[in-house]
Image (tube, rainbow, N blue to C red; front, side):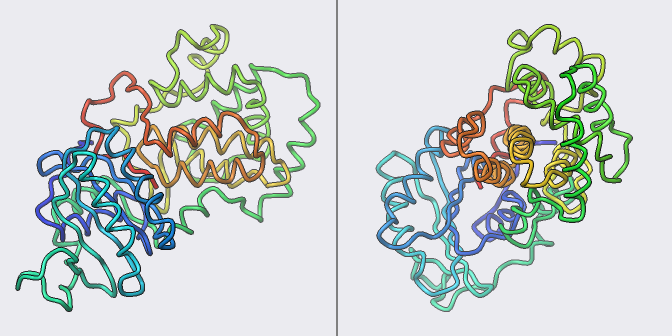
Length: 357
């Protein structure tokens, strides 16, 4: 997978953004860092009330500038005319003060693109119809890689919310096995079965899910597993030797994020999709286990450039266990747009896959 997504003009930027974010934005403002004609970091926030426009704009500017943005395209989606004006004005002002060139500003409403900064004939007051995404080469490239944006941000949230049809069985399995003597070998077998690439698309067995999520109460195992699944998050020298040995012998080593197809799609065939299956399998009543697996999934999502999925998983984790420290730490990284160090095999140009959802 290449991180370079080449774009020609605001229409192509607007067409590509849902594929980058993983869903179709609504009442949102999005800022896109550019490197030549290629996309860098994509940062998004909801349209705020006018009195919070300055703070909302600042939440985008900080991550973009830390990412090294020198040129930025700004796009707002609004349901009502001029709803985005306060935050757009503040965002453009703050970006320019920070030294970034704002090369274009666009507003999307009712299937049309408007330009609040251009009054020439090229930008009619009644807007231009949005370009058909199927005619944009960059969209075709992303579709070929497996990306398909979900209808809304709420649909992203549902990727990590519990599946009521499975709650009872998984809750019973967790309760039945919670008092068992801790055993890392048992946990390693569970994770090996859970993450076996050839396991198919059937939901994971309740007992396997129970052992896998109960294992995450062991901080050494949990942190080692995160480092194993997302190379670069935690160097192997920081993992307990016994944990690393079990991971090496029992848990499949999935491709690094640089070689993994994007996974914001309906079938989720890859590693993140498997972890999201487990998130949905664990009921809210098992709050500690649910928070832990959501935090693991969030680390993999953030390392993979899926900011919206990472944020959704972290929101569920902290809703269930507000003082879950690892989730709180990752929220700070996501909010700040701070990347994990690149692991082995991860290319230097992965900025184009980074979105803050």
